[in-house]
Image 1: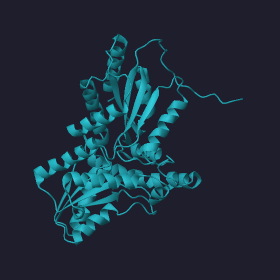
Image 2: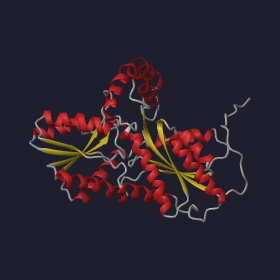
Image 3: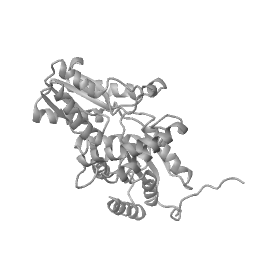
Image 4: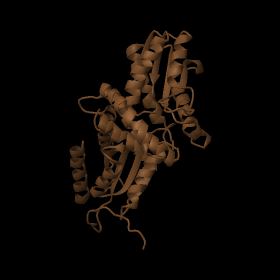
Length: 367
């Protein structure tokens, strides 16, 4: 007998209802709290994803559950505690703000859309937010990843999660995905303005380091475009800032395990810059659209210590895009471009307005 897929409960279908367009802004994720238990739940989901760790399951899962989770959860929780805010995890706080501001911007442009945010790992989950958009009447959904550069470890994993949701959804909305925007003019401009704002307040450095999240080198060998797209972002940003090739370096951070990852690594690069006499270095993280553990603790704290201990004089970590107005404008431009052809500007009727109001109430309740 063929297996029966467990379709989730869906609201009754109403013939003739006005179409609603939804936007789902997806970020990587974060623990619910800076505790060992919460971090362990988060890391278990994150590191169990075969897109993230491309090691045979029979080898990897025993290592994950028997060694890595018991040893790493407490250490990571202590790091999260150093960056936690009264509102919660910075990554979740900023992603939530981005979604709310994107909703405002799209509405101001005359688009009748419902914007929600989700985390690939942790809460709010992608499945729950896709359900919420569908409950709000969304018949078309644009999945907008917070990853400017495409990688199978991140972007494709978001698509996997959407596809898993699709397998248990009877009436599937029309779906579109934004896979990359590493060279979009608005994104580059937002990065440049963030850097220039910092330089206006603190002066210019001797050297600018652009640090991207690392991935194993074998992903490049297998055809992943991430490495190339990071370098293109770096070149475009440097050109926009008027930097010569000797004024900046692209590096890769957050190496995990013993395998070779994309090089040069960020921390050794910082040490080398200090040792060759660079007095002040500024570090920007173009691949992170929201500040998080990797930018605040790893770059802002560990990176600073490495540079100063190696003989550097002054170190600045530049904030991520977060809720910068230029970034929200860029997000709206990207969303608008990818929604081309969808009827988002028709005069709303009572059904669509009610759906939008219900979604806004639900968004506030989940946030």
